Length: 364
Image 1 (cartoon, rainbow, N blue to C red):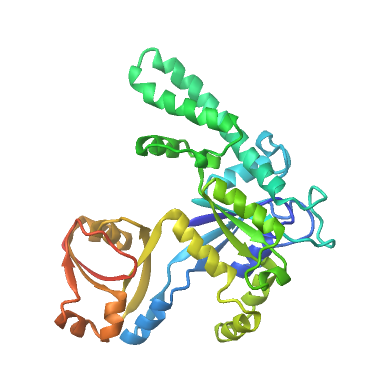
Image 2: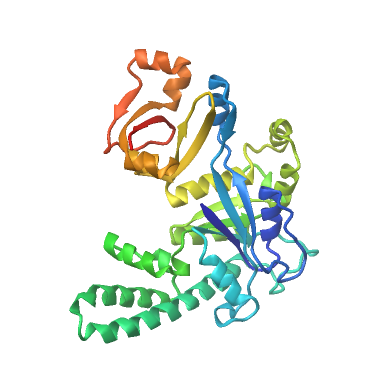
């Protein structure tokens, strides 16, 4: 899973990236500090693995991972090559989803590229550049399809969808806001439109606002209303606070959270929102050698999940022996869970659920 962290210069992108990856990406108080995208691989926290590790006394624990890309800031005109626009847009094309960091705090010591704080204006700037870049793609494809349509009437569907997308973009709306049929959505995905990528708006607030007991400042409320209008998610974070949390050991974090009156880090919020956004779940494998989490699309069938481990598992799939995580933990061992009929043998049509502990049987 690749997530691109984007935003205007000096909104806290690199600070957030440093905090959640501890990768030491350069962060400075001037535009275009980040040119090539820094990449950080982050293990996804999963308390279930710790419990299974103790249950099986496993030699190794392997968490699933997310790749975060800290993508260069941009300015108006990026779609026409202004600033680092061309690089910015090409880097966004590589990610599965976008985390758009929006500045929702006042600080005279941190300059804003436009000289004022305006979250909705910031969002509009970036969204508009993505839309303009998509317009070029759609216009070129439309011309090509219209020409081919004269001799190939089977392209009528493609042409009609392109017209629908163009009308949306011409209104200044992102492609992800469109209501599409399954076939239309599948075709649009083939275009790899930038404004069609799923997005999480990360409202970056001050430390005071982050620990204000859930109260939102006016900037955050504006961003929340906009996110809801296009069906996107919002996560409220404090990049500065995340930097402090990143320096703590695991056993210190709980006390720190309690002192601040918060229950989880911004990273945990982003990961949970990312899984929801991309419709992902995790299944688990466990044994004396290794316990491990595997990320798959929600709705995946057992053979597809097996293929996540190795292509031979999917090709030679016979069956999957499955127990729900909570059933396994409540009973203490797989043997007891089997005695109580909680371990099921499932075939090729079984849809894997989050938290399934699975042993795949295969033959190649």
